[in-house]
Length: 192
Length: 171
Image (cartoon, rainbow over all chains, first blue to last red; front, side, top):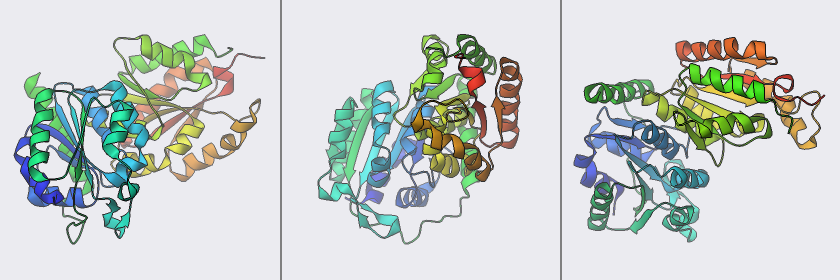
């Protein structure tokens, strides 16, 4: 499965969610599919996308939060899985694209390439629902399932280590940040 | 444990009055009372962290979502958070309110705290993070409020150093 195909498959379901991604291929590919004001790309601070998602999920329980994470980033903040599990935000879905490498810095293999099982770690951390999927049908089925279950879930999606030719897009970091914050505040006002 | 109850209560009340509704924290002796107060308060969300840097992400998310937050940590936790502060809070202009216990200064008996005590302020300066010391109860309300005001007007992290004379009542 290619990550881009996986993103395309669930893209229509992201419409009313707060979406947080990591840097690199995930951010560039989601933007190339089509940027929306409810997407925030954390273009550095590896490991903190899930923590940022947790901050949104705890602040706004009425919003659904989707975090698109990666194996390299999760490995930098394994403790964050225990914090996620501890507070168990039922409005947060954590997707980890696992390409077994640090693709954007030259494709060096991560520990998942030698057998580290991120879904197993997430489950042992206490995340109530975890799954590892490796084809697109399984991914979309699992994604739909966790959206309906209304509980915290970590889906590890095994993807090929291929990405776009470049990672810098014409969306500036601060433009994205302010647009995203305004989006979250506008949906609060509409509902409030 | 001679951690000041009255200073802890004052700090907590000022945070509450400043509209802080999410506190992320990693336990540290000087913070035990403040963390307990956050835990016991139904109007406050306490997030107990595995590592302090997570708190930067949580505060950024809370800020985007329109909720005021603060981080409570030891200076060694601040040192452990530096990349998150630089690559999330500074890069994305997050008004991050950090309350940092300043271990390792004069009077410190724990040998393991002493190195961090010497580098905390130079690291804050290197990061261009505005900071001030809370050394007596008189400082608490005004300086926390002023720090939060600057954090929001500058859209940047700020730091309050909780010092021994404020937090520790042993002679």
